[in-house]
Image 1 (cartoon, rainbow, N blue to C red):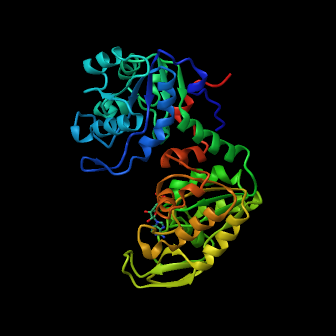
Image 2: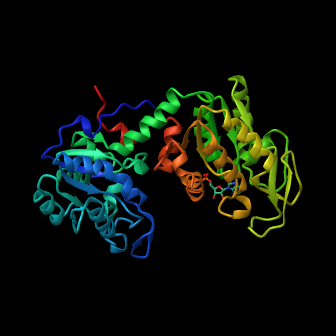
Image 3: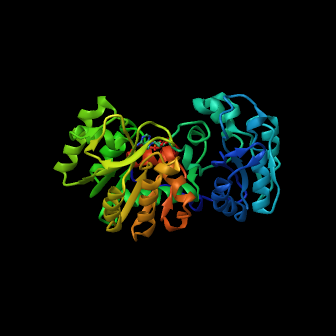
Length: 396
Ligand code: AMP
């Protein structure tokens, strides 16, 4: 998908009421924000709008309040943290489209910032209900979407409001689409995609789309065993999607016919059961013993994958190489993360577990880009249209 969307800089915002969809779905620890990266990520767009004298109306979801006002999911802690970062009060409305929201929006002066309550307090949000969208849109004169994490969802606050307002993207979304778009359409080569994680079925779309674009496809994680079994390897009790064996063979053939190199594990760190304290050993990937399951890639595979990564011009990575939540089986993911960090490639991490591993290792600043949306980046890499971006105005 080649997006060329208008940004906040392409529209006159001074003195206008601007509804900004952010991703303030921050992890909470009781009443405390456990990690405010998403709030920090939203600041450039908000600060730009404030500096231009816009009247800023922020909105977001948090958690799963299931369409009801449940103050456990209130955005009050976010309003407080935003006030601290912006050095000015961010007023929180008591509701989303109710009297309080409308009154507070009407009272905004140039450069003021307010935050609506959690948009998912209304079930109409996720249903993309037109009446709800219209009401939400009536608070403002311009819509800015800056929530990449929900851009793959057609909800009222991510796409529906764009039916009623001129709509552009904020800096966060613009960065996501420009970096990932360039990687897909005009990558520095060789272009290496590293895919891991639990299921082949989750990544079929991505593999299919990337096979036409990459030079090398690196497959690790649990999904590698389906491919290795399809190649005739003995995989013991490793996770395997038997109904996807044929498809795995077809994908390998498709890659071969296009001249795309596919790298699969050559050795594995296996355990006798799915538990961190299992009896473990390192074995050849072609011959995993009966009663043992692959829980990580082995050291020879780390070297093999690392070699491809080292010579890459662009690396896109989505999904861990093993059960990286357990230290014992995190070595493969750590090895790949280290190789990506040490390479000179344009490196793009597609959110989720691989991003968590990179951050835990302190490699975040060595990456070109860590996507702020796991699901959204996966759909982007799949070449799917993201409703929260498709609804925005194209640049002329
Ligand atoms: P995904 O959400 O598809 O990126 O998958 C991430 C999950 O895959 C993590 O929770 C990992 O524990 C899991 N995973 C990766 N490799 C394996 C494996 N070899 N066996 C079982 N689970 C795995």
